[in-house]
View (cartoon, one colour):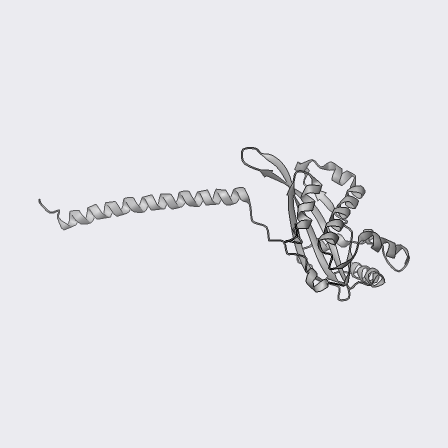
Length: 232
């Protein structure tokens, strides 16, 4: 059998190499596009929820402030959340308070209704917690509590005998479609919650807790439970 000339052999190997390279490039582009579509479908992954730092608060009195901001994306059509703001804020406070107090009993929590009573007994000295601008604390990079909120928190917490305040700063509901075939509509509750050292006037802990559900209260329940992992 006649051996191929060196140049012919080089051309043959080159063609095979180019075909193989083209196939590899095509595969990489295809997989890359698929990955891009997958990332686009899923969206950016949220930052994991930080658990409540209850170990360092065990036995201490800690004020649990009421929620003052609740909102939902228009696409959810949960207009009643905005229209009936006061009763929905009260219901959200109930869900948050019952779950946090029940799932973190090592802390001596001062719930919203007790903070309100304390403020009403000290008219002219303390501001009612529902009238404070605590929603400003939802700002991600805010570390120092601005006045007059700083003074208000310090005054009410001093009367209640607490150094730390746990404050739900905002509850936002965002639309989410679950499943490509069913197209089931659910919502993610995003609860921004902070802890303030009222003596220093500084935010010492912050997280966004998330929960998924078909209605506002199921998703909020999931979000609050995420604050105390390891508890059923």
